[in-house]
Structures are given as C-alpha cells and as structure tokens.
Amino acid sequence: KNQVEQSPQSLIILEGKNCTLQCNYTVSPFSNLRWYKQDTGRGPVSLTIMTFSENTKSNGRYTATLDADTKQSSLHITASQLSDSASYICVVDEELNFGNEKLTFGTGTRLTIIP
Amino acid sequence: DSGVTQTPKHLITATGQRVTLRCSPRSGDLSVYWYQQSLDQGLQFLIQYYNGEERAKGNILERFSAQQFPDLHSELNLSSLELGDSALYFCASSVGPGNRPEQFFGPGTRLTVL
Image (cartoon, rainbow over all chains, first blue to last red; front, side, top):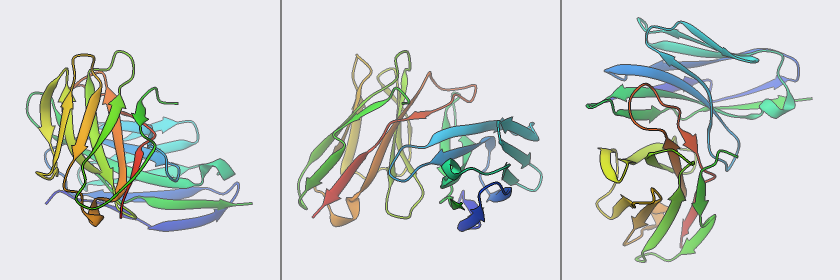
C-alpha cells in the first residue's frame, strides 16, 4: 500500500529558530513530491514541487530536499516567523496512465511558532 | 485567494440525507479534483475530472458521485450520509494532467452529519 509518513507529528519552536520536517514514502511508481502548507480549516497552499530527479528546491525561507533512492524528503524552514504556524503536508504523486497522477498525502506535521 | 471557489462553506445535515457540494475552478483550469479530510486525518483523494470527463478515481465510496459540467464547474454528491462522512471536503483545480501541474485548493466545505 502506498504510504507517506511524516515526522514529527507536532513541533513547537521559538520565533527566529530553524526547523526541519521529515517525510518518508513508499509510493511507487513515483513522479513528484510536493510540500504544502495548510492553515487550520483552510485549503493547502503549495510550497514546492520536485520531480524524482531533483535534489533540492527552495521557496523563500522554505527549502525542500529529496533523496529518491532512500525515499526520503525534508522541509527546512529558516528564521521561523509566527505566520509559519500551520500544518506542513508532504504529498507524493503516484504516476498513473495518460499523464495522470494520484496524490497521496501524509498526515502532516503541526508546527507552532512561539514568540 | 487561490481563485477556486467552493459552496457552501458549512453544511449541517442528518444521517440518511443527500447533499451537493459545488466547486468552481480557477479561470483557465480544466482539471478538478475532490478530496476529503476527516478530523486529524490526511487528505484523501476522491476523484479527478478533466474537461468534463472522469480521469482518475481514488477512495471514493459508491454513495458518493461527482461530475464536471460544460462550464467546468464540478459538483460532488454525497448520499445516504453517515456520521463518518463528517469532514472537510476540498476541491482543487489545475491546468490539466501531465507535467506536474500545481493544484490550487479551494477554501473547503465543512460537512457535519448529525
């Protein structure tokens, strides 16, 4: 069964500090890995999208890394801000036919930034 | 604002009833996706439409059905509702399949089944 597991389940850090969130997946065949940010009760917002051949992708203070051999990804947040408090979701695309993809979502890491 | 709209924002109904959730994709997007997010659960892919045709199916129950209309808006129909159907239902849209299109999510419809 295709799965996406994230750790830690929740994380609390001080404003200004860095943090790294982890994602392990077993999805196959794999095409892309995405990281989303989801504020409570709202729709997810895309942070990064990486193909299997990319190792790193940055979006401002967010940097995602991917190791397709070990099926691991991480999201590093630099100089955290109060607005970074949200759930961060790792999503892996399973390649279907005709260019379609089925997204498998992790359950997310709940990040809380405290002043 | 992602450009994807969903109505209604909240819906409260009773077990056994039927409801319809509506989604309008971003202008120019041809693909629509439906997802279910139960409390403390990850999003579960339900179904995808592209330009009016079903393209991929996920963990969608037989009691649920969807369609995409010629104007590209989509509706998700949930029938014979059970307590366990209470969840946030998200719609997302993208330009179309292939080439890792970014999906833009709507604000969601919160369904409560009593």
